[in-house]
Length: 336
Ligand SMILES: [Zn+2]
View 1 (cartoon, protein in one colour):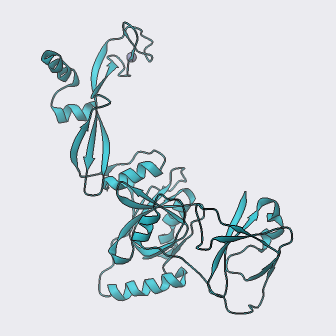
View 2 (cartoon, protein in one colour):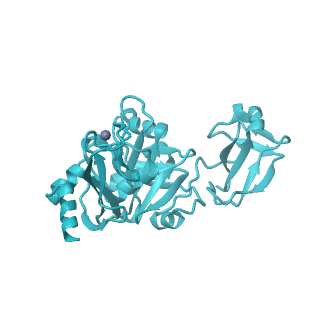
């Protein structure tokens, strides 16, 4: 266990500093963002290759000899903030490498939320963010970070326009760029940072005369329109949950390597286990159950964002095929 922090000097150089848990009690009371310190007697070490928080290859490590004193009056003016914003193509290059956790700044254009009034374990936010050059990415936040994001418009008496997100992990899923928050991610809206404020006024200047958009925040429960890429990302980065959505795509393939049907118990619809000479239902505790054929078909469906596998079960497939699974099975038998 340890604590990482970022230090910025008069030259706007940002370095990571690490304090291991055993030394934390000595320094903890002093640790606060925005304060100024003089530091001496520290170790210098190489940064790990993964999840880098700064551009510097080195980091400071607090030791038993470290003096860490707050400066009441700064010796020279220090910058208030320092970000290393990355644009879309830079993020795409970093995607799936786990080498850096960069920062982004952009305009929030849509937000999907699973945050309920009651605190749940599956809280999640997917925010669509427009970066420079009109490129778009989706930022995912989880749990408590999702909850505080969800509450923000309330606190601000309106929807935020500009977002600054730090220490995010870029992922490429199905050809789309997705950004996942990490435990070190901080979110700043509109004028909470100087960089955000500049961005904010640029947007305002651009949008003058344009009526404000509908409220940003929407729940998945209201049957959202989702792309295949968004669904793929949802599955790879969230705990499983039921959502209603509308996804428009085209069936590009039937994946039949896992077959197209399975045998269920005629009595309870549980999948039957094949024994040497019979079919067994563990649910009904029947070693010689009567089997019924049911559909389980994997469809590869694609839209212009990505391709995904959708599993259709009996009811849906019977409708689509206009034929019960048992009838389809009969037809196959006759052919052979
Ligand atoms: Zn059964």
